[in-house]
Image (cartoon, rainbow, N blue to C red; front, side, top):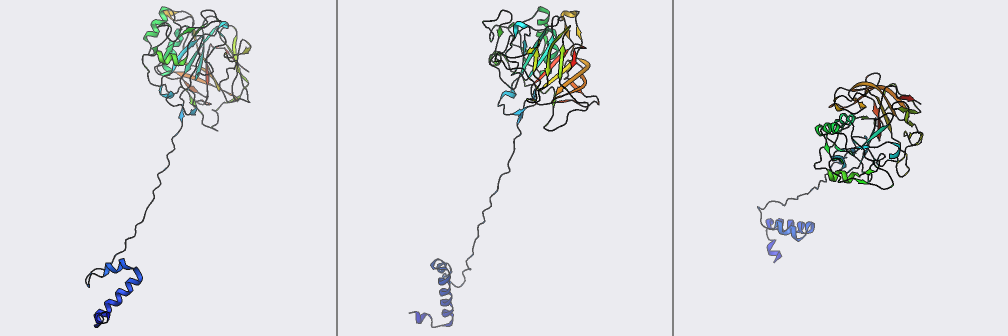
Length: 356
């Protein structure tokens, strides 16, 4: 039969092609070309797979606005600042919460007595106190923190009237006793305590988070012009020295003493901020307009001393009005930057600074 098929030249050529195809590609190829003389030659398709690697996106760390410290804070940086008035009389010590505060402010009250303001934002504190009353100096400070939650034990009628007109959310003991408790072992009025969780829970609203009030150095950035090595500073409020901060090279902090002894919290840990910012401000003792005696004036301009990273930077503070921030300027007019970390802001009267 094959002989009869190959009896013509044309058929012999076809047979030769079929044989070659079978040897090269097998039966499948044979079936593809055996349809007839006019069928097109087979095409070969090559598939190329391209792998695309998505670019890596680095998310910058969160930075706490009141400390300049980068880290993982979760939702804490979205909440408002909490402004808490703290007793600083001898009977009030040791105070709770001052080590956890982002910022601590010290102001003069009667005589040579001072009070503290603990400003919380990026951290939490399970115990804060003793909480004491509002003074008119505080009203001028609250705009630095946007619209903070404000906690105190109350105040006289004139000052509470000022507080009602201030842009704050008042969650103090004068509003209700909710969130506050009297602790045993301390005499009134030095025994009123609270916690950050209780204060946030008491707030009828949560305003926006605060912005930064200071500038901070990045790693290895030099200090502002005019910086000089410093052993620390002694601070007088009135007739005598109240406190001092002494540079500790090992911890790179400024441990604080009060009345000649370490200023510690209930656990025995000493207050030791990264920065001490001292503003010499005028105090008005007239009581004009129902203001406290004394009333600290925190607008205008004056002498400033910034203690950071083992150095003191003399300069000037400038705050044009109550709705402006505080500018810290070196001698050449450039901003003074702090070291990221906790800061104590000291509002001393003129002549209250002793460089150590």
